[in-house]
Amino acid sequence: MSRAPKPTLSQAKSRGVPSARGRFLRINDVIATTGLSRTTIYRLIEADEFPRQHQLTKRSIGWWEADVSAWLESRHRNAA
Image (cartoon, rainbow, N blue to C red):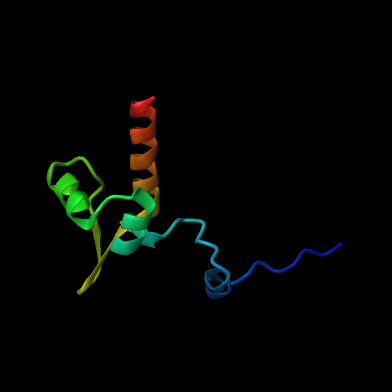
């Protein structure tokens, strides 16, 4: 029995499958994921209580999805 070939990165992206290494989230994705406002996210960053963003290009920034997920998980553990 032969295996199906592994999809290329562009094929996986078109299917909505993130890279095995993770992905970057843009601000609107972070807002939707956390339920926080833009202002609150930046306020928490300034207080070193939220993961810092990364410069992706000259005019765009993003948050590593794993960092945001870890932050959410830590908030969940602290609330329990």
